[in-house]
Image 1 (cartoon, helix red, strand yellow):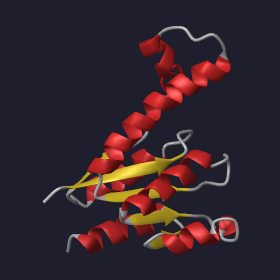
Image 2 (spheres, helix red, strand yellow; image 1 turned 90 degrees about the horizontal axis):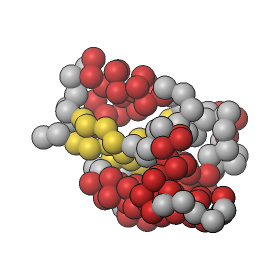
Image 3 (tube, helix red, strand yellow; image 1 turned 30 degrees about the vertical axis):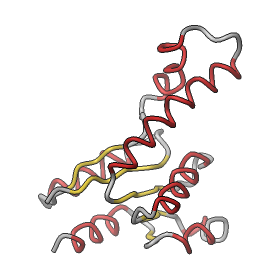
Image 4 (tube, one colour; image 1 turned 135 degrees about the vertical axis):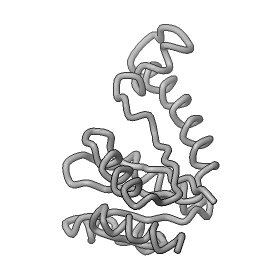
Length: 146
């Protein structure tokens, strides 16, 4: 059986590629999906599809409609959600995706550095598992299919 894992979290570094590589090295039966990781495409998709918008507020609104649609489709197909909270960027989208996973009853793993324990305590309490690094996620995924 192959499982689908939705990788929620910031798109400014290569954490997804690192995780996928670690899982592939263990030959585990997982397929990965995620939010749009091309920042410019994510921001511009509304105008690309719906045409030029009158101002930045409408531009953001059009893009978020389509990005939220994409996220909903992919998360609905996911068997597991991994939400990575980093220290560098504000994590509003990650929090939204983690909350959506909780509300949908999707099994949720949160990756959270020690510095964010206090600020994410309620969300971590609602997740199935909270860890501090990618290797711990890989171990959980491996254990899940043993």
